[in-house]
Length: 98
Ligand SMILES: [Zn+2]
Image (cartoon, rainbow, N blue to C red; front, top):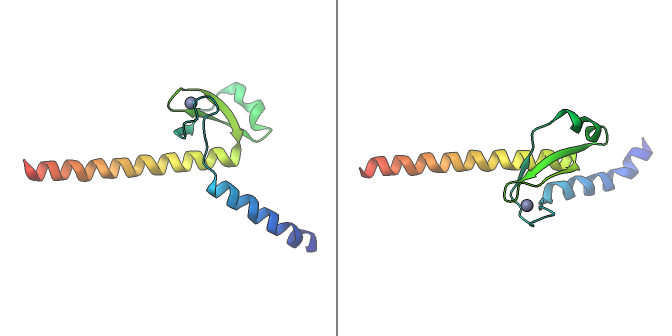
């Protein structure tokens, strides 16, 4: 138990690093990264906790730590939801003006 408590600050640091982490494409430097679809050959990467992500600008596919990849996926979905909401509001205001 003492061991767990001692390792807790580093765990907290690790989690905060993941939360504040912003993924960037290694090829073009874009931060527009999304989770990539899993393929059968990816299983060998999953064993090492690596998950595929894809750059939305240059379409480069790469493997990152699975925790980072899940954050990328979450951020991407949240962004999509926000964009959909904004479009809806926009269309509603256009409809009102017409
Ligand atoms: Zn890129």
